[in-house]
Image 1 (cartoon, rainbow over the protein chains, first blue to last red):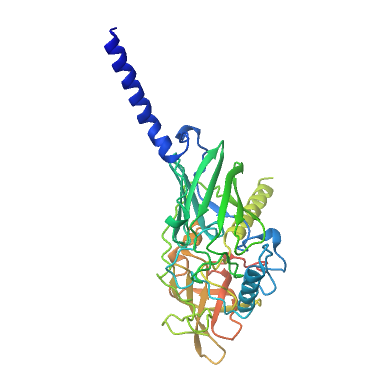
Image 2 (tube, chains in turn orange, red):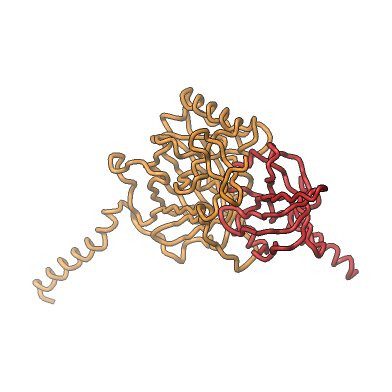
Length: 275
Length: 130
């Protein structure tokens, strides 16, 4: 082989190498986990337990709407005061759930705290949480990209999430959440809220064939004095061939929240309040 | 032995159904419902098998002959559908007895607990529906 050809070949190799390396440089991570190395999270899943967000710190008996039930996040005094105000409204049945009037997403992390069915869709480049209730969709990009800079986010219900696989464990970070900025995003019906400074690191894995676990590490310099760790679990529905369906919240919503009082109304079949 | 197996199987299936058919009101607070259980008997007017919650409209006649339309709220059709409930489960004209948690303020509204169907079949948490 002539010297010229050797030189051309070396140039071509360098060019090809750079082309293969370019996406990695852009996204800042070595490789996307190929499909055959990803775990099987197929099927329909249901959240285990009631919709109290953090049962580990719960005090009081009953569900999220039961008077006296509350959780104990490591709140700053400011956010503890907000929570206590919400609890008082809850006890008076005057804390409107923002989803009661249909239309806004529940956002993150509340999407981990819903009744009805879930699907967890695993692909090499992206991971989807699809909930029937709402409906709600969350996207976690696993193609190697990084979280956008703070100035490139503007606060949304579900924020932005990027992640990667550590064996069978999906690790993702979520930022760009609106928190309680517009008073329309809560974590459960006790009235838990976080701020627009919140960042959440989530680790998801199967702990046995029929149980998925999500461990959330919540950091929020405005709302929390230290990290808040919350664990949610999901059970796989063992019946084969089940379907997910529409959840058209506005289809026959006979329980809108009164915009003035915050009370959840009950409408009769004629659309007039019954209570 | 076969009848014993049948009893065990029936108990297991019943237990699973009791677990699965639960009155989850996912969309809104159920704070307005009392913890008491009330039984109403009447004629199904309509079964609204629609989201976010199902509603059974039942005409109930009192001792004086006066008819009151009750609204009984149940779970989302999605969840109920996966548990075997269908729009025809409560057909117009069907005579049923339904256990409910009535609205605390006395309105003719309640949260579904369980039902006894015309053929005697039980739905939901008819027994031990606490």
